[in-house]
Image 1 (cartoon, helix red, strand yellow):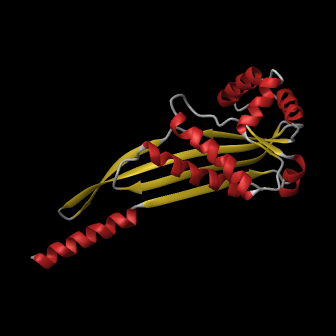
Image 2 (cartoon, helix red, strand yellow; image 1 turned 90 degrees about the vertical axis):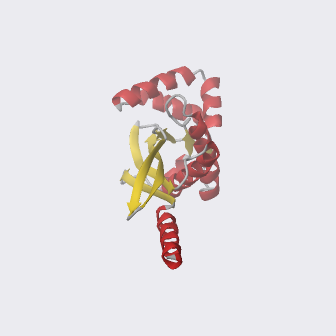
Image 3 (cartoon, one colour; image 1 turned 60 degrees about the vertical axis):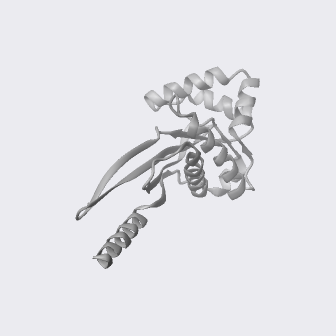
Length: 209
């Protein structure tokens, strides 16, 4: 009986170990044939403020901060403006409200004002801007059974959608979609969001041309 109990405990531990872990999957969905690492280096890029729903500051702010660090680390050769620098310039040129209105329209219609993009690019002194949208943070619980034993696994997920816009033409030249997924035996706490966001941001930065 003792050996049987030990076997069950060990098996349960192994099962939980197999389900735990962080998985980051970024997929590049589109690249313009005329766009690549050389054109990005020549043109420079500005990161627009990360877009997310209300009440999601707990993880979009860490994502934006992590993305800033990741791009500087992975692509130090790029002329690069972080979101704070981008908004500072737009505010200085009186373009912040116009930009925010255009982003709201884009989220509803998937259409961006090309004239505004040209104006933004000229103000920022770069050819490209990076647009990132985060979906709501998801966490669901799954109840698992093995014989007489049952346990709960929590599955957490951060989804991010990103595009690079060519300011002079107003075209999308790169598009990617990523998911950072974590499974474990405990609920996600606020302090762990930073870890997920860092992994998701590094996944995005690593996929840039």
